[in-house]
Amino acid sequence: MPPFLITLFLLHSCFLRANGHLREGMTLLKTEFALRLYQSVATCRNETNFVISPAGVSLPLEILQFGAEGSTGQQLADALGYTVHDQRVKDFLHAVYATLPTSSQGAEMELACSLFVQVGTPLSPCFVEQVSWWANSSLEPADLSEPNSTAIQTSEGASRQTAGEGPSEGPGGWPWEQVSAAFAQLVLVSTMSFQGTWQKRFSSTDTQILPFTCAHGLVLQVPMMHQMAEVNYGQFQDTAGHQVGVLELPYLGSAVSLFLVLPRDKDTPVSHIEPHLTASTIHLWTTCLRRARMDVFLPRFRIQNQFNLKSILNSWGVTDLFDPLKANLKGISGQHGFYVSEAIHKAKIEVLEEGTKASGATALLLLKRSRIPIFKADRPFIYFLREPNTGIKVFFDRIQIIYGSFVHYPL
Image (cartoon, rainbow, N blue to C red; front, side, top):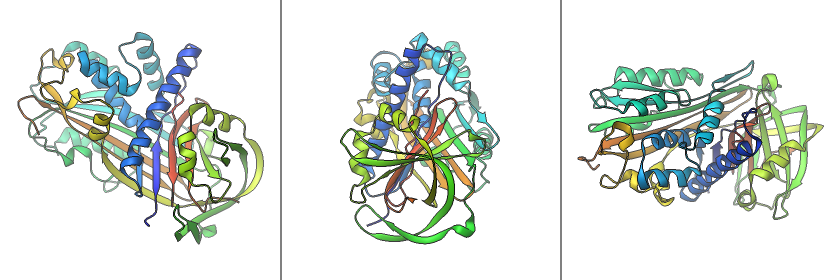
């Protein structure tokens, strides 16, 4: 049985000046979106490794809401759980996104979105204004019949530099390279990147090849990092009574922390805990940890993949967006005719002795209607990344050999 690793990127931001009820409500909605996305991908990718970025998926859907009308807009709102046409939600999210990019001594995080527009395509001034104002987003003219145009390559290079990657790294090519762009009018590309250095680094000399017991009992030999450190730790149970241990590993400057959730009973699979994860449960666990000195064993791993976002959104009832006859994106240009042809998501994460590096990208291709194309993680565990001062949860994954993190959004 192949190793099973799931990584779920979750952006969790907190805007302190916002109304408490709005903030809590948006945190819940963002978390629910991330969990729903995670569960949908897990169902499609059973027994395979994957990593996703809910923040990188929700951002382009928010931007599309500015141009969507009628049932198309309603379906997007139902999928996200909120609408940016609600002024309070719009102002709140804009304030949250304004806190990004985040950069500190030991961690860098950036969320951005670029809208590449076919040269000569008319756009509504209102749509242009809203996109330019939204979440580090930008409008870029490009010849989309040439996906390797200068504008797209420039954006790609900037995203990779932000993630601390070289020219040949990143999530492995970019989403629009997988689809035909010959008749594209707009391409939305969102990126979410994070790079952090452990507050107390694992020494490579302490890394050993040790057994990791996979979900179905297969034992693999994996590189296992080790350190003895003062950590925050707690023992809890989920709503079904499953016992778990929760460990926090901070990054340099305490800007972001990695939380690991490990079933205490070796016979309890992670899949029994996942259905009972809720925003309130995660909040309880992370706020009730106590200081302890522990031996920490954590697998070293790296994973990247892509998946078809279109099929997932279709299963959620977002169908008009992809239908050339039903899509109503009139708010983009003041004219009918745009629809989304493809939606592809790519992401990558790496956890090693020095720290964690991750990135994600989502591309939505819009076409004209005329074209239809001791804490010892030696068994499956869950982890997520959270920014403690603002509440931002950056990743949330699962490792079944190397099951990574589930990142959650407090906004």
